Each structure stands twice: as C-alpha cells, then as structure tokens.
Image (cartoon, rainbow, N blue to C red; front, top):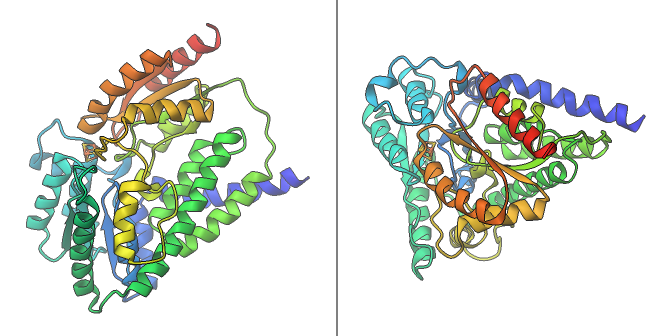
Length: 391
Ligand code: SF4
C-alpha cells in the first residue's frame, strides 16, 4: 500500500519535468524570468561554476548545456571546424538564434580549447552579454593555488557586482554556500539511494531530478529533492537480472535521455555516473566559517570530485574510477564519451589501461547531442551485458 502511494508522487514529479528537460530548459527559464522581472540570469557553461557568488548577488545561475537533439544547427557549423564536440556548436547556435537573450551574463571556464575559444566567440558576437571566463589553476600542488583561485573568484565577483549594481557581501555569500551545501548534500543522498537500490530509482529519474536543479532556484530544487528522495525511499521493487556498472565520460556534454534509458533497458543498473558533474562538484560541504571566497577556492582544490577537466596530479584519475567501481560493487564500466571531446578521449587511454590491469570489463561508446537512433548503441550494450551474464 505504501508502495502504491509512493509511486505516483515521484512519477508525477518526473513526468512534470521530463518534458522540460527533453524540450527546452531555456524556454522554461524564460517563463520563470517573466514571472520574476528584475532578477538577472547568468548562464553557466559546464562544468563547475562557483554559483554561490551569482546567487549571493540575487541572480539565478542557469546551466547552458548545449541544445539537445531537438536543435537544428544552421549557423554555428560555419564558425567551427567539423571535428568539434556538439555542445560548443549548439551553444553558439542558441546564441545566434536569440535563445540566450534571456541571459544577462554567461560564464565559461578553462576546461578545454573549444570552451576557451567559445568564450572569445561569445565576447565578439554578443557585445550586450556580460561574458566571464574563469581560469582554474592548472597546478593544484602549487602552494599558491588557493590564493590564486580566490583572487580569480574575487575578480569574477567584482564583475557580478557591476552587473547587479550593488556589492555582494560575505554574509550573503555564506548564506548561499549554506543553500548550495544543502542542495549538493541532497544530490549525494539521491545518488547514494540509486547506488544502493538501483531497482527503486532509475538513472533517467536520477538524471531528471538532478538536471532540474541546473535551472530552478536552489531553494525550489531542495524542496523537490526532499520529496523525491522520500518517495523513492518508499519504493520496493524487485531487482532484475542486470549487470551493475559505473558510467564515466559524460561530465560536460550530456547524452540524450533516450540513450541513458537505452543503457538501462539493455540490461545495466548504473550505480554511479558523472552526468552534470559541475552541479555535484563537492564531495563534502564547503566550509561556512571564515572568508567565503577563500572557502570556495579551497573546496575546489580539496573537496571536489575528480574529472576529465580538473588536472590534479595528487591522485591518478584512473585510481578514482577503479575505487568507484570497488566501492559501489559494480562489475563493469561503461565509458560514454561525447564525440570529439578531447579530455574524455585522453582519459580513456588512462582508464582503459587501469581497468584492464584490474580485470574490470568495460565498454566504450560515443554519443552526439543530435543522436536520434539508438539501436546500434543498444545492441552493443546488450552484447556486452550478455557476455558478462553468460560468461
Ligand atoms: S564536451 Fe569536451 S571538448 Fe567539448 S566543451 Fe566539453 S570538455 Fe570541451
């Protein structure tokens, strides 16, 4: 009876937001802005942005994660080489077709060459938009890394103060850190729930519940997550005959929902993944005592997750992946990388060697935003699953 009651709550939530996630989160955001005139919106390119600084200024940080598979690329193709990932082109297409006009600012980061170039292309093509660019430290072992990043965040903060027309004080920053700590803590709970009982919370559901937090105010997202976690905790589904995997490689550009769904339907329980990683960046809360900017900078170095675009020589990334497999109890890895994503491809060489050395089977798949046909990927996954189940 409790089970029957629990399902409609979470299913209603998922179906309410699935359409938004699959369609256009930017349209949803435009409606939101119309209802909240005066609130400025700042677009955040994946991966990590210190959203607390934007939020503390009374603005809404909104993810700009490409155009999905419903956006026709008509103008941006001519501005980039053909061997560039989809998200770079679709983000520019969104700008060139006026779909980013709702934004008052946008922020890019030093994650890779295409993202660096995109920031310059935006600066030149959209003079009315405040384009910020964060240079993350490349040498995390340097004793100057924290103070360097704190200085970078202070520079960005000064830009946002100009945008919003008032100072952003430490009290507001600490409060924003508290809010985002709560949001990220709930996301960690959601992921833990899915990892421990994947039959009770699918990856598509986890994805949608995470994705909506990239365009809703965090306070609203926190309320939704609490409701969803409570509803999912009451589920009691039967475990199916599937293999348990960790998914890696989709940290920036995001695969179509149908592809994620196809992986599950082909026989995988995904116990962990790196989708929307920038919004789940910290493995522990950011400290709230002391200087908030310094705390955010220190957390980037010492409390953040590993990623293909964070160059941390203190611990090999491949070790993190192997640890994740062991800790979750997965028996295999699916590498799902965006086509032409160099950071993901470079990582794959390291991951492959480590996984083979540890005897952990893996499957490598590539995706593009504009994918519509998933049969090939599904067949590959089914063959991989069968080879493991019936070995
Ligand atoms: S998908 Fe990869 S190559 Fe493309 S912008 Fe993101 S990190 Fe850079």
